[in-house]
Length: 184
Image: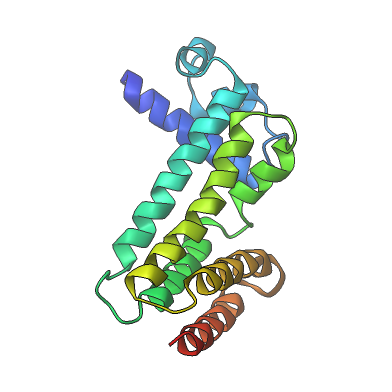
């Protein structure tokens, strides 16, 4: 296995374990065992568990934005709806146990480190994303619409663990249509 392949495997296993068991519930030994790599391989790539968590979050965020971009037609009249639908598909495929970024904020809050910053910036980027869409579409209440849609997606993410992704998606799309119609 090449160096980059080992690193990729390490990140893949770490993300899965962190997602399934939480950041604090997984030790480096478990990651090393499940990734089937040498301890030194881990430390050659990541000098600490926090650095590993940071990279896992960065890669997950990159995949999220690539996922959204792949499902959204920028010239569409229903860009907001497409974004909500794409987010909901992401929840079904990648976030069936809740939001990894929110967990990172909860687990690392107040510890003044890069992990919390990465997770908080992910949330802020979502708000900026909707602000840019509203601005591009010439909406009157750009800031309000961006805040409402961001809140809708965050609420949808939370509700998947309570009512399931199918129902949460159904409600989110209806609400997004209402919000977009009201902003016209």
